[in-house]
Image (cartoon, rainbow, N blue to C red):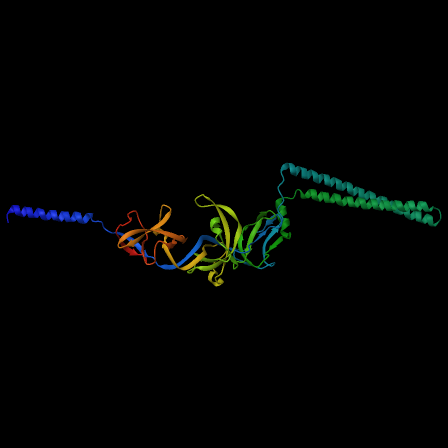
Length: 405
């Protein structure tokens, strides 16, 4: 073979290889997708929300009077007995410090009270002298009357004078006691806080005892300090008598009824706990979400239905996740929400048919946060594209990348 023929043959082979490569490169290839086979299964429709445990009945012990609350030696978790355990004590407050003007006025009041007391003492002495004289006059009158020297009327005048002087002495003594009290009150104005502290060591304090059996949940005023009447000091309750409160959106709360089953997750144990809805509170409140949106919320109260041994480590103020079961069924055809997409005002999904994607319009029933019930459009046994992307269209060749089931 000549060199020219060899050159032609070589270039011909290279052209055929290039043409085959280009044909192979532009041939449409199946798109790998995730698919699952639609089969009947169980479906549970729930309302999911975070909840918080709390003691059913919390008793807040407050100060019955204003004063100085002594330091509370008890600790959170300590057991208390009804009408026996002394939780806190309150003693009188210290006297206030006087400014120079008030101190001068107080000292002037003391001097005035002392002068009044001296005057009252003089009045008592005067009244006692007058009484002694009236008593001697009465004795003399009685003797003269016995000798028929004095008339009956003069004797009565002497007796009246005696009783009058006696009453005057009692009045003077009472006035002296009042002046003595005024002096003590004036001197009390000058008592300093240091003297008050020394005198109050023997002062009986007002004890505050637990009204129920339980444990201390929270100490609101641990250290010694002045408190006002009604100020809360300690919270007490029974930690074994727990309930769960979950604030639901009002649109979800209207679906919840008393007695519905509750699944309690993420509480720290290996298995979910069971609960039951006890009450849906009849009023809502506004709460600002983490995104700054105002939402209307409603508290739903849930009781544990699992044995106490299963949730014995849960206490007051623990966070849990609750799933309130609205509906549960078996033999339900369902698809993940990721397999569905909107087409106009209908829902649709891609089904594998002879290796190609076939778009189907479907009718949905009940939905959860992850799944939706298929009422029509797809039959059991058909394979559905789980995550249809932008490349998936009607008639596109597809192949299974991995089976979800």
